[in-house]
Length: 295
Image (cartoon, rainbow, N blue to C red):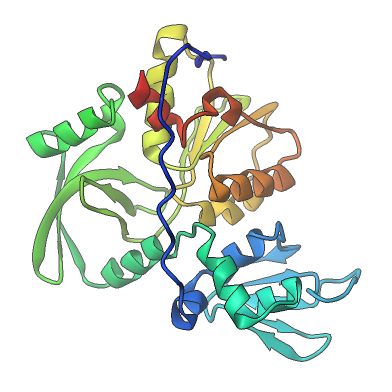
């Protein structure tokens, strides 16, 4: 469904702000999965804690590199060598620590969001969940051009370390909530995807819920072909789709037009060879919501 057309509109590209220099501690806190994905390296088998990859420094038929997502380290059973993020990059690029840090500084990662989730995970309390009505939240959605399809969203009031907050909430499959307002972007509870099923033969995959809802708004006037929807709620959640049992005749990918979106699209096409990258429909914009805002 070509709900987006290449209209004659003008826009200004944002200038890239200079990156802050990354230190060793920050580099080691980046999810090791995302470092591997930056080189288009994906696991051959995995679970929630551990994954096996082919070795970094040699060809092999059986993967011997074990990555522990909890410890954020890797171990090569063939050589006995242990890796962290920096030494992984040094091995692949044959570079110095300084060059490895520079490489990491030039890539967008989701580790900042994950840090907030971890910090809030054991100290939050949900006070109430209700229909959206707070003027500040409604105004925030208006700035994002979200005026329809808000039945997917709720208003949540919560506490973290005794401080009270309110935000827009989008529920995931594990009963956790993706939280958004003008100032916050985090997850309360267990992180997971959101899978909206209607037993359709077509599957559409999005990074975040604002892009999913933007798609629904943009396609509203053109008639909706039946589809199932997966909202990843984070690029790092893609591995969960390896366990997907449903078979789809058509799979469409609507990720962001950035480095993380490139990585995610590549990984999804490894999982689903028939998946189609639909980002060309909003190619001049970072994501579908940015396109919606421009209209």
